[in-house]
Image (cartoon, rainbow, N blue to C red; front, side, top):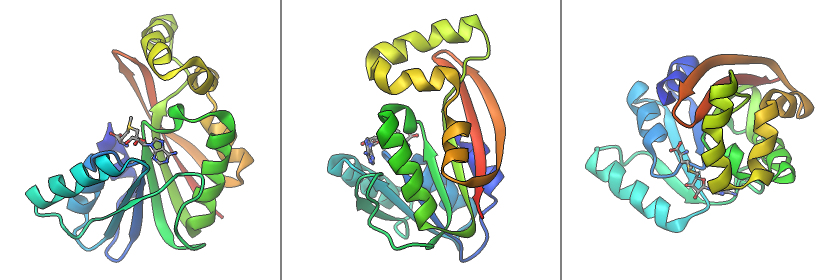
Length: 186
Ligand SMILES: C[S@@+](CC[C@H](N)C(=O)[O-])C[C@H]1O[C@@H](n2cnc3c(N)ncnc32)[C@H](O)[C@@H]1O
């Protein structure tokens, strides 16, 4: 599923790309491999995860990927900096206010014409997929996950003034429907 984001972005040499809430850096690594001349940064709120990610990059000869510690609703980057921002399986962990603040921050740090690529649990395709999502809700909390049952991501993108919002993929998984999106900063 992460490869869908890699393909839809099609990074170019010199592009600056951020993997937001990067975890151990799996997506950051796929992005760097897809375009060795792009500059890839991963950011995560958990310093232990960052240290695991750094070790993983060393093992994979991808030391050029930079990692920073930081929160999604106050990103430590200047305005209009990135060509691409990616985020995978993260937004469903946030409260509605945090989701909104995070989308505003992503919009702020993207260049005009820059792209936001997302992958997350979203509106279930059918009743089976709705039932499959329940364990995730029990584990991660109903407050943060319920908006995704209705399909919150396109609405949030619109509200944050992103343009050309497109659903680029839909995956039926053991834990529910996962959708991918792309949107542009005008
Ligand atoms: C489910 S993991 C997803 C990791 C990775 N993106 C992936 O797809 O495998 C969620 C990640 O979000 C990070 N995280 C949680 N709250 C955060 C916040 N407010 N800002 C940045 N990262 C956060 C966690 O530390 C964790 O690494």
